[in-house]
Image (cartoon, rainbow over all chains, first blue to last red; front, side, top):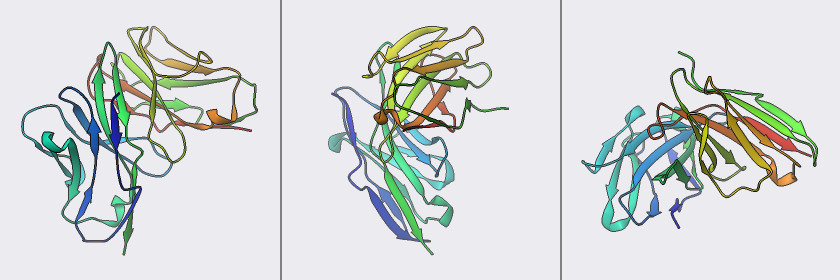
Length: 114
Length: 112
């Protein structure tokens, strides 16, 4: 069965520091991969996606992610975080089996220290 | 342009009751998907509708049902509510069957 693991439930970083959020997936074929962000009480906003091609993907708000097939990983990075980046981050794998279905990880809550 | 809109935003029900949640997709989007997000977890896929037909269903009991109307809006119905149905219910639309999903802000259901 397809699954997504985000090993870090909660991460705290200082404003201006770099950030890396980890994501590992289990899927038999080449996956479609996504990172979403959710602010408190809000829906999900797409940060970036990987379908094929260049394994380093640029997204909105200065985020990027790298797809590593050998490690089944799709880690999210940002060189310098801002206080407004505090939120919940979800990694997801997209499945197309007659329907389009996203399988999400449990999320990583990001706290920013001033 | 309006994004995905959901109503109601919050509601409280008691066990055994029934609830209907509504979703209006982005104009021109033909597909609507529903996800359940329990507190502290990632969203889980419930249904996808495309061109008014159910195209996919997640691992949810038959108490959960949905439909899509000719204007592509959608309703999610949950019967015989259980405490465990308390969650944020997210609706997402996409232009076609596959493609980028745009999420609404959700309907938060509390079952007492």
